[in-house]
Length: 53
Image (cartoon, rainbow, N blue to C red; front, side):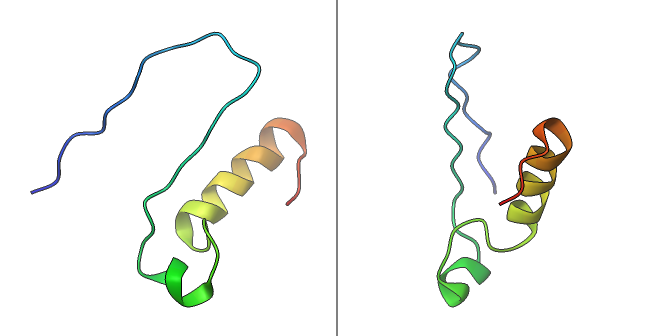
């Protein structure tokens, strides 16, 4: 059974920290955000601010 996501709530800040629990692909590929979550995150960055990583 999965436990619910825990959030600290809204905070006014110029910085956002993003974390991910590694899935099966990250250790194999040797980098974080290496699979579906990473593609989604980087697409959001690009759509919101034209940031390409």
